[in-house]
Image (cartoon, rainbow, N blue to C red):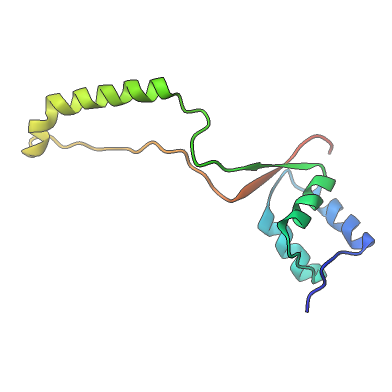
Length: 119
């Protein structure tokens, strides 16, 4: 059975280790604690607290692009509808091929941790 906490000395070692990089993923911390200290926390909050103690803030991903401009999106849809309207016959008969690149708001990871402030 794994321990559920770090000793004071281990905690200081982990905080020092967290200062070695500018960008972290939660899994890296979970892995280090589990395999080097035999510690697995029941709650993610315990990991978040360690990041906070090391002056590392975090950003969560979002489902929608936070920079999306509804008016620009509406205008683009209008242009695309017009383009489709004037070319639909050629597209449907195979005289015109359309290549499409999908614009998307890419998101990765549950949380990306960024070191802010002190070095």
